Image 1 (cartoon, one colour):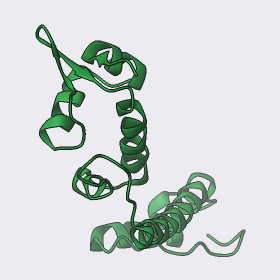
Image 2 (cartoon, helix red, strand yellow):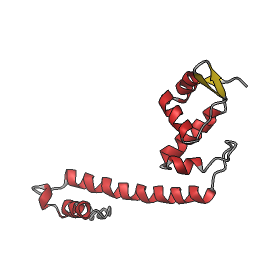
Image 3 (spheres, rainbow, N blue to C red):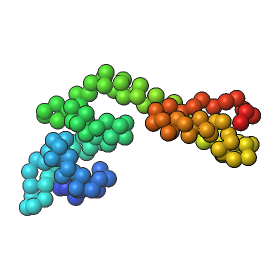
Image 4 (cartoon, rainbow, N blue to C red):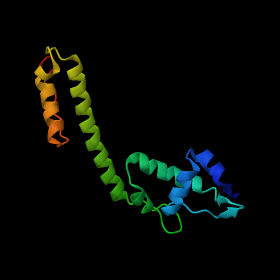
Length: 143
């Protein structure tokens, strides 16, 4: 296996070298050594970076992602943690779907002004309360 220098890892992983140095500081990746002033990484770091990117996309924190690896860098992913994150994402998807529907209603509402639309008023009230709860949309044709 050939070591890759930091510039090549950054290019192949699609992240800046500063991100690689930050991940190193956080203990997520480790160089195998240096060639001159340039860090060298085992080619397996690319798979690890892909797992980190997937975890970040799913909404895991870097600390949570760090716990998904054994001290020798092998993945050891807690399935319960994955299930909990999937449930969290499902909930967020439902909330966003309701929000999308509410906004689409507000965009096409026949009320003379958005502030006269009961659905839009409920959306404003939910936003003002900070509850994050988005009102359910009324039946089609209802303002």
